[in-house]
Length: 313
Ligand code: G3H
Ligand code: 13P
Ligand code: NA
Ligand code: ZN
Image (tube, rainbow, N blue to C red; front, side, top):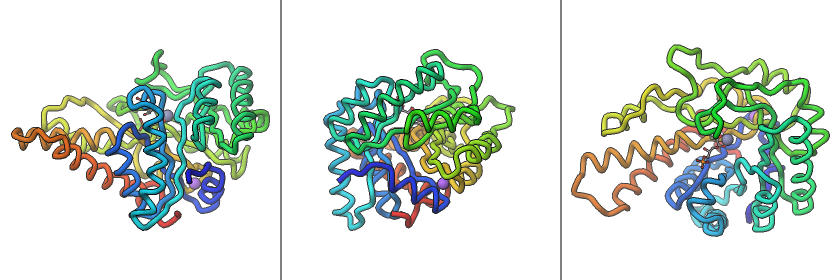
């Protein structure tokens, strides 16, 4: 069955790699994720956002994720699979996911005051641990286009707060803000596209071996942006996190790396190309099939060359 993230994270921290956390909203994304992780023999975290629940219905998503466990076995490699709530924003949402079979949840109290964040996170941890569900908390605020109130600047995680936070809340992992952000526009043109690995190192000194999570870790491959734009798209100045920096982070206590936008780009590039080059096609399988294959290839690349999670299942 689905498992929680505890074993997965202790192995990743000790093994110097990170487990991929890929978002899914539909069947083709799920198939691509499972196929890629089966072929590279990687553990995987399937993430469901609040937006995904609204789009696809959480009951259907949950059954897809449970089906993924069987599907991986059918493909000949029963890799460990976690079903995780991404960016839970209330106790009630986390509780609902726990009650209906998620094996891991994130409570994102990063926009609250420190004290309120501790209190809410603690409340979720107490409920989750009674059900053997693991919890991810967050300290520091990611800048991003997806925020309702777009924060112009990053509020980096303060290393002096992390020990107190993990002790008081009892979380199993901690998401930190070190310069990553959600979406396909992470840096402005001309800006130095660097994340603060120095802050990560300081955090690690305060809580040695504690599982760290990086959100907003898409690399925005420029060939995908080019393909999209060559086939009618209009993405301007889309910039991501360099894969070399993520590979460096994965060697540390960073044990979960969240990637969603790159998958969206890969699918969109494939769909645009097919519809542009074969205007006579109208069977969704003829464009969603190639999109799924492109997504699988992207995730295999991530597992092998960015996270180092291949052969760790
Ligand atoms: O954290 C953001 C993830 O990419 C999920 O995005 O809320 O549009 O599903 P979403
Ligand atoms: P990206 O937008 O960089 O893919 O980040 C995804 C994420 O953090 C999901 O929680
Ligand atoms: Na790691
Ligand atoms: Zn995120």
